[in-house]
Structures are given as C-alpha cells and as structure tokens.
Length: 360
Image (tube, rainbow, N blue to C red):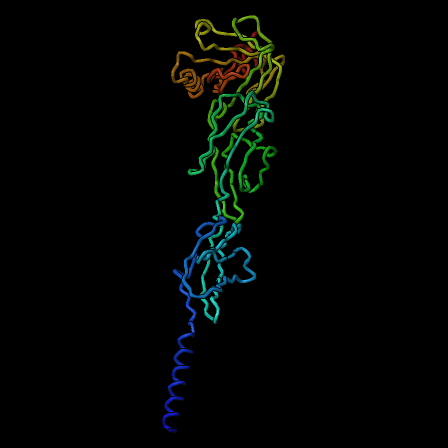
C-alpha cells in the first residue's frame, strides 16, 4: 500500500514539474541588423525590422544624445536623426529592451556636414560709380585655374587706384594686406595676385589677367576735347585737356592739363587714322624730354609694323646725327574712345631741345 502511494506521489510531482515547464515562456529578440548609418548630415529617419515574442519592447537612447530618437512602430524600430550642423561624424548606441533582461544594441552613426572650400572668389566687379567709369567692368572668374580675367576697351583714369567689389566666402589679401570689398584700391598696371585664405589657414592665389588698350604696357594718353568735339580739320585748334598715365614711372603722369589739339600732316591727314598736334599754353615736358609747347602724335597708318619711323629715328641717334627726334609709343584715347597706337615725338621747329641753332 505504501509503495502504491509513493508511486502516485511521484507521478503527481513529475506531472506538476512538466506542466510548470511547459507554461514557462523564454523571451526572444532578433534584429535584422545591429547598425544604422546616415551618410549625410541631413535630418532623416530609417526603419529596422525585428522579431520578438515580447509585448513590452522599448528603445532606449542615451540621455545625452538628443540628436537621435527611436520608437517602436508596428514591429519595426524607427530611428530618426536631426541635422548635423558640425563637420564631425557623431555616433551613439541605442538599446532595444524586450524585458527579462533580453536586450540588443544598435549602433547609429551620422555623417558631419561636408566642408566646402572657402578658397574661391564668387564675383569681382569694378563698379562705374566708384571708379568714374561709363559702365561696370565685370570679371570672369576661373576657380579651377585660379584666374581673374578682365577685358575692357574703356579709358580708366584711376587705373592705379581701382576700387573692386568682390564676394568670397574666404578672406582676400594682396601682398599680405587684407582687402575690403568696395573700399581697398589696387593698381592694375602691376602684376596683381589676390590670395584667398580659408578659415583653416590654407590659401589659394588668384592671378589677375587684364587686357585692353589701357593695359598693353605702353603709356596711355587721353585727351578730352571741350564739348566732346572731334578733330575734323587741321585748323583751328580745339581746346582740350590732356591726361598721361605712364605704367612704369608715375612721376611722368599728368591729369587734366590745359592744351589744344589740331590735325596735322599732308597726305597722312587724308588717312582714316588721323595724326595730331597738341599745343600747351606754356612749355611742358613730356616723359622728361626738354620742355616745349608743341608735340606731335604720328598715326603711322600706312605702316603695319608701326616701327618704320621709330627705326629711322633710332638710326639717326646711333649714327650721331644732330637734332634727332625722340620716339615714344602710346595708346591714344580721345573723348574716352580708343583711337589706336600713336608715336609721340617733337614738333620739328627751331628752339632749345629741338633744332637748336643760332637764327641770328
């Protein structure tokens, strides 16, 4: 009898243990991946799939990482990030908790803002109202070859002190001197290089390439005739003002000097490109030559080289002939319009510094 009771008790215990184990549920959690990567710095959201038999799943983001958030949406984990305004990548680890100490980590990373180079020039303008010009001079900018290209046929009275308006994310320097847009002045007759410095201290050099009759390297003569008149006859002489810009030696420069202009020559006066004579009210030196009232500008229209007269004058000097003409080639503007290359020389006349002979 006792044996029978013992067997029954053993069967009951085994049955209890069997059904107890059968009712115990093991918590499971499986993620399709354990990392999420955001490859841009923009605000975005991504979803991650998971499987679990738990009804109490939580996504836990470290308290200090408020740029990232996570939530459970229909058996998917939604991970969102805010815009990353820094240049550095940021990372965090989100914990998925299914309860019963069942967790799984998810590594989240987001790229930083791509740093664009500040070493460039976006615009470069020589404005008319700041430089006494007829119109703005707009440069073209080559940010690959680092070249500022300017082309103009206009006479520029202050080419040695031009004011430039520019736009650049960096800081511009010329010869280590910081430039201020719309304020700083530069001479465009000299080699000109703008250095653009980035906020990280690196820099790029932009060379200025400027072309046009003002920038051939030759001196520039500009004559403004009163009333914008044109020289259509050899007489009478027309009152005018004389401007000289010497690209190499500033001491020869002249500005708004009173004088008069008239046509000259015989057969050459009938050519499309007119020769001229100018007269100053008192003896005036040009380019350091002996002072005189009268000076001549030869057009050399029939000479494609523009050098035949120049060579003849030079041969006379080398042979030691007396009373030879000087010869200086200039770019000529009249009333602001380019007229071509002219050869400036003395008027042939008796006088000191000219044909210096005794007339008695």
